[in-house]
Image 1 (spheres, rainbow, N blue to C red):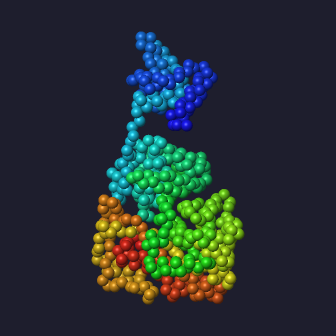
Image 2: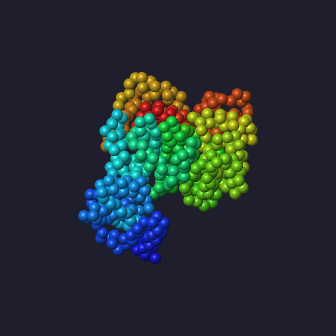
Image 3: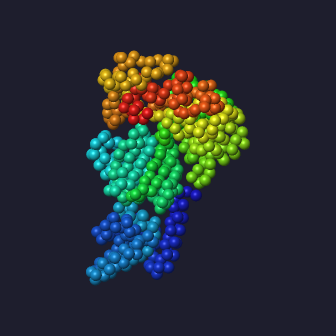
Length: 540
């Protein structure tokens, strides 16, 4: 059936429904098919805004008889009809009403007041203290059509490369901020009605409730088209009730499979060699640790992608699934609904996987199940919340207890952070002062011998210089990675060979085996001109 016939059938159903409604209400019904393309509406009686808002049109006037005929729809408020009746009665005039279909109303109004295709300005990130940019963006967001504002916000965040959108209720308005390259930037102040529109769109698309008094999580996808290139954007939605209303954070995951590649992460050659060696083995556990937003999931997915060959069975357990990768079995685990990673893990192990990724180890049951899997012929990858590799290993011992059988299970612990990368096109070299030089020397005083140490008496540093494309002088982020290979010296803590176990002792043993700390990696990156010491101190 061609498109014209489909439209005709839909209009026929609309007219039949309207005629039936008119009969029930005891109103005159007008079928305007055939004349809705030629009939002219009477100007100057009602404003265009009133007609759009109340879904009615002025069809004709009675001339000398001072009567007016209005075409109303099933969506016209009865209160507005009563208001018009009273208004004209007070002027000794008559107002009559006939029911028309919504299809007829749309055709008439689109001819009388054609919709304007608005092209809105792109959002710009305001420099610190730049209130003019904030005002411009706020004005734009407050003027975007109600049915477009949510899509506009998402598209603009994606264009800016934002990882999060924060929509926050405050006493005097709604603040919108975006996290770009790891730093939060104020974008706009919204009117309350804009907030309701955005929250309504979040609710319908992300399957959350606007009336809930409990924290909620949702997930949605949107196709984004920029300059003719289309990609699928995954979004994770977190909503929580606050003092002034529901705050929302939308996390954006703009990655396709080609971007989930270890080569793209900028991992140093020594660290990459260790990762490749560990994940090439058929068994053992790799733990990724770090705070939220440190890129743990991206690194794990990149490892999974590297292992994704036709001769391996790979299963992931995730809450929620952030990236879809072909060739692997991805299982969503709703931990907020009572499901657990441990129960699912026991089930999927019966499917004979070669590699299993567990979204996060949060409890002793999951930890023990994952470790048992890793010593029975599976490679297990997972994330864990801790500040450093030594802290993660110490916490894992607290979870599972000292256990000689488990001592060879964990093979690699990686702590990761993301720091903003300096824009190479505008960064500026400078001579550090004596205090900074001494701080760098102290930070690198225990750098392992296998790492080439820069000349600490003559080194230079770089500072960001804002430019047209990088308002803050940074462009993207780089990975800072601390890797603790679990050697014989580290295994002793899990076997119980050492009576007292604490984080500092584990770190000393790892350092003796040549581990480079997060801070050392960060300082070396600053000395290379990749980032700044301020950025290293902010993140690490």
